[in-house]
Image 1 (spheres, rainbow, N blue to C red):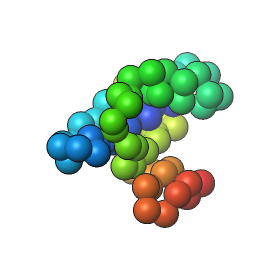
Image 2 (cartoon, helix red, strand yellow):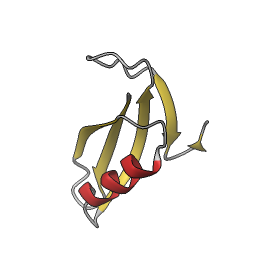
Image 3 (cartoon, helix red, strand yellow):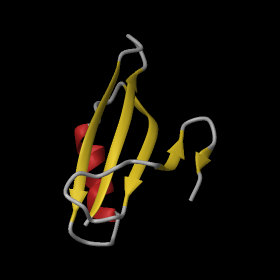
Length: 73
């Protein structure tokens, strides 16, 4: 199981929110597609963390995407 944590920020109000998605597959495409559905038009992805340990309570210690640096992995 792979778990993803999205941190998004509203471009107008500068409010930040986060949500988590999990996937049984190793393929990140279905999670990416679902994540894009949950993001509103006026929001930017600030950071994206991933946990590939497969545990029930994920620890998001691996940063995969940063808005200022791009994809890191």
